[in-house]
Image (cartoon, rainbow over all chains, first blue to last red; front, top):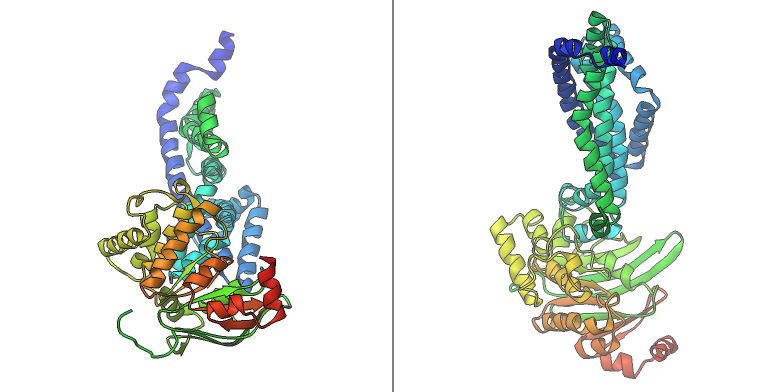
Length: 229
Length: 248
């Protein structure tokens, strides 16, 4: 038992590697703060394009989305980070990773938002059009507020996935949380830093996961769900 | 609505036809609505009443014919069409209120974002419009907190808030419980008394008889008869209209 403890929950190792891991956590958070807003913005553009664009453009956008989604995110990441320099495009590692992960996560945000927009009834468009509102105003004040509300649990869920996906950055040697944990593990010949990293991921994502759960419950049966808890 | 820009009809259809997937919904309809006039469209379901209304503000684009607003052909798209739509209020059978906004916000949205009024000006306009339909005390209610009749009155206020030259009403009471119909028709009648031009598709013949200046009977996308209410309802000239009136 104590051997198990020494191996996985070694306090000395954890204490010594904590600084390293916290620096990794900062990179993970930075990456998430780049990827999530950029992915949401790009996804929203994709969804709006699919809702409004002429058929040919809509087909081009859908094709792009399907292509990105068919790529395993790791392959996309390696392609962008190691492939672009061959095309003469040199990006800082953090930016390269952010670009690849943004492409990936935007394709999911886009599909979720597309479903949300499609779920708003045609009568809402007609009412807004008949009052002389322009397309931008209709989207901003009538369609998107309703569409986003319909798919909010899915949006938050995808955000959770997007943050977890940043762990892929460790593969291309970006010093994120997972990468730092692996380094600390190597230095100490002890896997305790990995457990600490897991705890840090959990601290980061647990509130978000609970939030999704609450959203899902209140959406399914608002009063019932609350009174039964 | 004070100075007459163009003499003649506010809204005019000339030879307007429209097909949906090979089915002719409208066959060359000619109709004019003059200033201050209330024209009621009657006819069986699928007779083209809604389609005609929707051609007026180009929610449906006519295949043939001309729609004129204030004497000029209504523009086909872009900002010019949006400007014309602002001056034609529309009320739908299913209300189509914005469910995430309060009554006040529903009414103030277009004055603020389409007509570009100030936030305060749009709010004042919206309050006035809601007071006019008897809902001055429900400004902050959301649609799901209102009865069907109240929701439809908010929708009428929304259409009124831009001071339209004409209101287009598509079966405004068909989705309402019978006991709520009266309040909505009452509001429409008071607008008619104020001289708001209206084109209204309706199944309420008693209302049409009493409030309309003219009744137009549509059947299978054609204008079959048109005239003053007593003529249409009491002395129908065609077999189709007689059959329709008997069935109600």
